Length: 237
Image 1 (cartoon, rainbow, N blue to C red):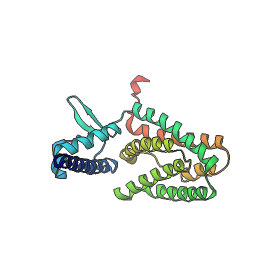
Image 2: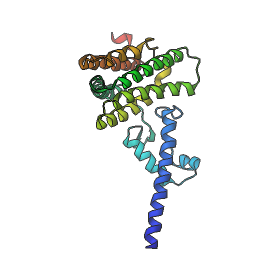
Image 3: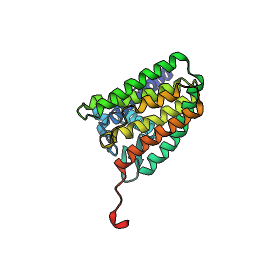
Image 4: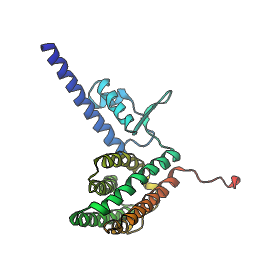
């Protein structure tokens, strides 16, 4: 019995350390402290975190399963570096999920939830408009991206559809990371970008809400792609 208890305790401690490593690395990725394509050394991370290689390896495997990290032969482990095709594909999924979220929101959200979303959209645009000045700190930029994530998640939460909420969260984390890393190269958004979207969502027309969200997502994609796609070669025209 004693040996079984000791083994169980070790597994718990190992899981706890892996969770700590996961949170540390994930936060570094999402904050842009570990930019896209950054090599991740298990040994260096283990030393920095003061733990063995095992929990660090478990954390990196979990992050790879979530799409934030990739491992390749002769390249090693690094922060996932998406291609333009990767981003386009992810936005196809995001458009499908969030347009359904918008449709359900317009059908199911309570009056209080609609008011809450209007307040969030107004605050969101104020933050983006302040960010467009280009004078704010990296911490503020991260706060803006975090609030943007919360706004879209709040729309999903108000649908009451748990599987949809989880899928949107998973997709948004990847998009969050890519947008954050490329944010400095993106054009500024229209001053009422989120208020215009929410004005439609708080109405009672699910078809209009679906269409509004699709336009919103496609606009975001068009803002990201120029940052990673090389300009066309004049000689090929």
